[in-house]
Image (cartoon, rainbow, N blue to C red; front, top):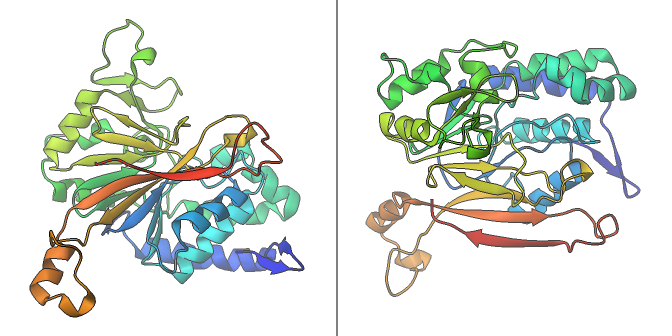
Length: 343
């Protein structure tokens, strides 16, 4: 987190950030590799060092002290303020460990951050030692989340290793992912790699023009692309309703795939200052209106009604964000709106 002084943000010291990393590392290892979560909560995709946009996201969607969050990874690299971004999120994680959850993205990796900016930022502003400490912490982050046994969340996507004969139930899926040992770097192949790197397979990526199906080597050179039939098989096998992932820039901030069985969420607007994309936050909420005549007041709620409210189905909507200041993007208006879509 940053201190605010005389209207400016002053960065934490290196020693303070080292301590934050140490404490976060311990916390990550005390929470499972796959976390079980409950709604309501808000799901965010890639942030990529866009610190000002992250602050604006919290202004629009609520601060973590009152709002539950799940971030799907890629907090650093490419953007100009990766250190501020990851420091703020780590501080929130320490302060609200059961409200804010941070999954690992493919950019939370030593090899990737050496190329795409975070290593250079740490070296320029502080030291290589700080970068190494962040990498040690990234190596302990959880890889996936399941929300109320209905929604599977990860940064990238699915893996062939989740379709072996010994995996048939949701409990098997949880056991498999929780079996990934930590700390660990991101390997070049396998389950951990796929959860962070794989993508939906779109028609334009099909070499023969045929409707994508099954598995295909990824155009990224790492992991796979998977077709709509793989999404359907995964959801049916594990009795799930939806997959939520990040990992790809989306013009409107979110995009459905496989007949709305998967949604990609991207939360860095005007990505890298080069893309004219909106950002999105996937908001999972519950309707407490269990009475046709209107919502009862607190004094009217019985224990049975409260139980009915708590068991009501999750509802999904998207907070759309365009947050770059108008002086930097004169051709685009600053705006936000809530687009309701059922999951």
